Length: 261
Image 1: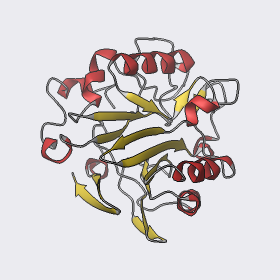
Image 2 (image 1 turned 90 degrees about the vertical axis):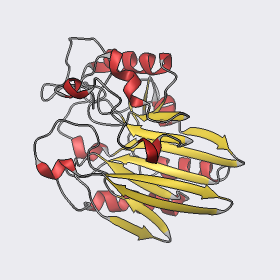
Image 3 (image 1 turned 90 degrees about the horizontal axis):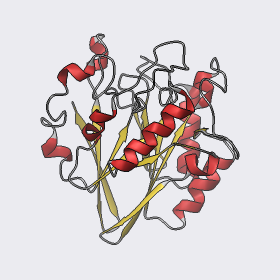
Image 4 (image 1 turned 180 degrees about the vertical axis):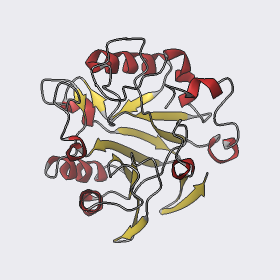
């Protein structure tokens, strides 16, 4: 998150102390917890976040491919226009993006890449039940004909994952879910994560809680329920510890390494 108070420390590369871990990653997936927009029209009444587009370069912490995961509860803080500004600015910076779009097909479309003979697919969804208090105007779920975020659907999302697995060696489901500041997953997180793996996902990775949560092995596949913050401006000490997860694919073997930060 590059808004609010964080610009005070963005005069240098924010990845400089972790570049030995992520700098050579073939693919870096980042939850971007703000729209990159200059709009002053905040739609969300509480804690609206945005970042100046000049900071968009700081999303990229690798020499190779970076993907911005946009299915979160802040990317529409400045409305659909703010989201569209953000996507336009990400495109200009050659940063791929998933999880939000001008309709459901665009928002739920995964990122795919082929590297060293392996096909990789990354989905990005948000658990909309976490934010039932917000109206469709404030936090829009993408529909067939309207813009919004990619909302997890118990029927449709597993079908998408299963279809992708038919053409992929490794499928990651990146979720925005859970209760803020809770150190353990809720029932919905467990249900969504298990459904994802049952459908063919090789790993589930979560964000949103601002603190780390547990790691579960389910049917031989890992679920990292919440990574915590990397760049944020919260004062609570519990929000100052987090994880990176590195997946290394060699032939048919995948090793997941968890780095505390």
